[in-house]
Image (tube, rainbow, N blue to C red; front, side):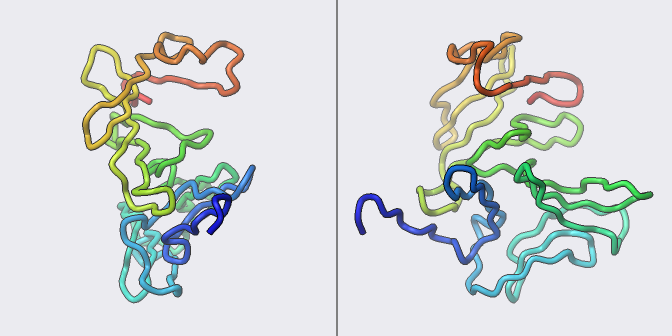
Length: 197
């Protein structure tokens, strides 16, 4: 294999993946990253409990949400943002039951949140792959730390803090001097009774 050729993903045919094709094809989310299919004939469906389920002979991954009542009007949609959502139609309005943006992999996408939902207890954080070509959960995480005076994002390796970007100053993260007012991306920080993200 020449240096320019990339080794194919370990689990290309054995995982439910969301790809981003903006500059080059990049896997941005993998549902069953720790439980690959043993065959190439996996099936994604909505079961009679209203959950998204990926299975071959047995279930390998599920959205695992509590659906208020068994419903035949649940549907899954891949939004233009790269967010896979499971919705249920109530009174002609779609209610999101589950979304992939709440369970990020190793890629941060626009409109995704990192942080803690104080109402549900959901903690959204990035997790590395085992290696460049294997999406199995790795040993690095990028997560919101809420233990200090001010919440801030930390990079952890093997659960030990490696780096932090400092608390939000109102304009930028204090440890990210490159985040000026003309920064290419817009960032927002929320710390209220509902969430810190």
